[in-house]
Image (cartoon, rainbow, N blue to C red):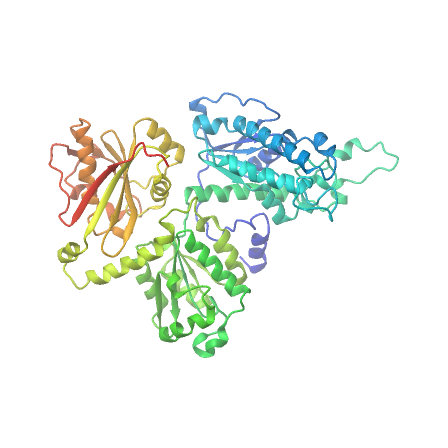
Length: 608
């Protein structure tokens, strides 16, 4: 793709959610779009561009059609667009006297009450069937209709009125499970509301896109008007595509599809301008320009739980001595979990980075300004995603791509860099001892916790780990949240386990999904592979299954391209392959490895 075509993809409806890091497409299934006239147009756009959806008209206080459990399973998501005019009607608002903030606030409170009522009705399928809901906010007007010199942050300014309604909507959505804000107002702002919004012609509470609807009925005038599209430069088809693309980006993040777990960067002409070994302090970037903007994006990626690494051909001692002068504390060397600053081939350094971080190449993005280095890395690691040719797109790609984002930031996210460093230190210690000696010195403690409700505080982390782990994953299956909630209702339990050794606390590092006497899936973070934690956890699960009166444990295993690490898990734990399942008698005395101290906590009823 030449630059002109590539640049077009960066600036069209894909602007807010770059596709540079996308590898695969999500399996969406059929969707529902619920709302009034604009939602019907939006559903038409979705269907015209390869996304199968049904539309349900929802106006005033309509009741949604009854959806059977069987029918609900046909849908993977719903998009809800509430009508502002049903929640805040223009007639009462326009007759409030200017300056009567008490009356405006009273009407705002009444509007919030109606918003809550409408939302309860629209979220019926979410409540009854755990159907994920993406709820659009309202497009904020472009200007204060009373006047630009009058108070900006008062309810008498309809701009502020709608902004506060959007905040109330976001707060209401926090009371629901699997409910997410679809920020239609931000999408409109990105593309320019003058190209979209109908408040240049129509009444302020209509708040959707401007169309040519009026043209047909106004042809009997003395002077016939032109089409609205001739008066205004409209981009409404692109706006609808942008909404569809924003939804797809959010859905990709929910599924953690093609997730980036580590970004490895070059330094010279990548994190700063110039070659620091030759220019020294002269390479210092401006405080607010491009390189610092890219560094800020990297730090936000780290906040989300991502890992940063440096792979640079440079003099490490000189880099260390100049770093604080160059960035003045904005980004620290310690923000990078792994550093390879030397004169070796970068592909060799990347091999070590992957090994130390326990990652596959497909989970890594490499950024370098040098086309030769980019080509060499791509040839050595075909699955790796490579950036750097276009520096002014880097910040957006790192910040806005769904593959670099997460559905929630857990307590572990902030500690991930520290944990990887501890893991590297642990591995360095291991190299000077025998395996048994090394394990005996760790002081390894593992705590198993049994959860059976999404209200448990560890459920978000367990859900994240379940859907992002590939290498130690006995089936590779991905789960929707509603499937887990249905499982809980039928007695399913999730056994999570955390680990602590003398180097660090690893928090939740694995889980097993258990239904009656069947281990449906066993997942563990690569950070603790080799410590035999799995062989301490399995006896706990087997003991619980035995206490429930089952004579046998069954375990599923499905080979995937990525899960070689756990191919021998059940065989080494004493299971036999029988009729497609790994099985083991619960009469066998379970025992944990001697170097692990293990404890169990049942938190089924502990609220979040």
